[in-house]
Image (cartoon, rainbow, N blue to C red; front, side):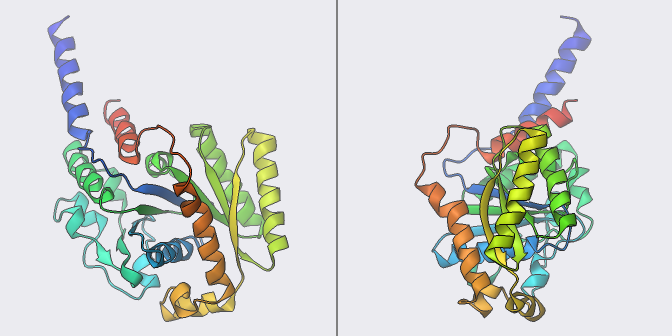
Length: 297
C-alpha cells in the first residue's frame, strides 16, 4: 500500500472512531414526529403525547429539532436557559441542559439558529453523540419534534428513529404536503415504519377519509404502506390551552382531544411493548452510521 493511501485509511479510521459513541444496555424507544407543512399542530401533539406517557409512569424526553421554529417551551410557558446549540458548542453537557416540563417530562429546546448543529465539526459531533447516547439510556421514550417539511440535515434523525409519526390535517394542502414528505422518506428507505395521525378532524369519518386518501396515494405511487395511528378532533379547548400555555391533557383531561391523544399514544407506544422487538441497530447506532458516512465522503 502506498504511503498516501495508508495515511488516508488511518485518517478515515480516526474519523470513524471519533463519531462512534459509547453504547449503553438500556435503549429508549424513539419516535420522530414530522409534518409536511407548518401549522398542523405537530409540536402540540408531541408535547401532549409526552404528557400522556408521563401519566403512565414512563420517562419521556422531547428533543426539539424544529429548525429556527422550536416552540415546545412556548407551548408550556417556559423559557429554556440552555438549548441544543449550547450543547453543540460544548458550553454544557447534554445531560445538564435538559429542562423540566409538566408532569415531570424533560425536554431540550432547539432555540434559534439550529443550523449550527449540522455545521459542527467531527469533534463536536462526537461529544454530542456520546452525550446523546448517555441521555437516551435514562429514558423510556424519546420524541423528536422535527421541523415542518424535510431537509437533508433532518433526515439522519428521522431515518434513525424506530418509528415515524406524520401529522396532517384534513385540509387538501396539508395532505399533499404530508404525501411529499413521506415520499422523500420512502425514497431514502423503503423499509420505514410510518404512522399517520390526523389532527383537527371534525369527525372520525373525516379522519378516516383523510387517512384513506393519503394511504391510497402512497400505495399507488410509491408502492408503500402506512399505518393509521389515530386522530384528534377539532376541539376549541385545544386552542384555549395553547393560549394559556398549558398542555390540553392537563387543562382539560376529559376533553375529546385529550382522550384521543391518550389512545393514540397507546397505539404508538404501549402496544409496542407487548410485541417482540426486531433485532436491528439502535437509534444511536443508526445515527452514528449516517454521520460517519457523511464525514467520510
